[in-house]
Length: 164
Image 1 (cartoon, rainbow, N blue to C red):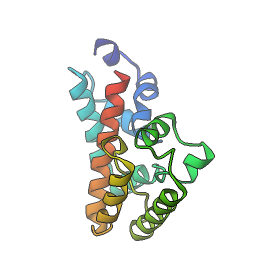
Image 2: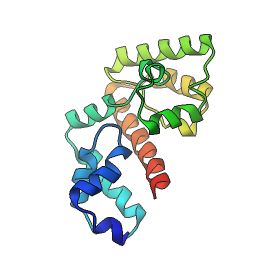
Image 3: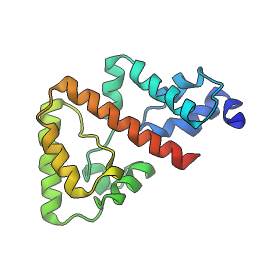
Image 4: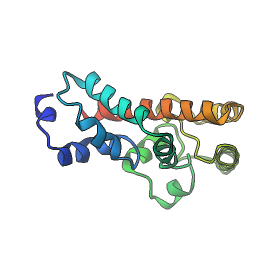
């Protein structure tokens, strides 16, 4: 932790910014909370920065996530972390029928909420991801923003554990 606490803002953001998909502002905000006693305290500072952000910034964070097994995956433009995570659930090896099911689920979700379906895929299989997507369509928009942020926090926590 000592070396992390000694990082300047730019170096800190470079190292921890990628934990949250295309949203380095979270690491920028958390940097001010140094020194961190341990990895848990570092994560809590990052998590607090995400939750204390204004709603429009939180929505931008959610929208920064790619559709699961979507266009970015096909084009090869996922971040390395997202690519590994989607592959861990088998989303890079879908049958044509599975791909169509994900396409329908992504479209229904995006139509209902105005942002992509976000789930911590490392906690799921491709089958459970589809099931959860359908279940979450029953949420209100506010409930779904809350759940999406919880899932983003899980993703970031796992990414932090890998990084450290």
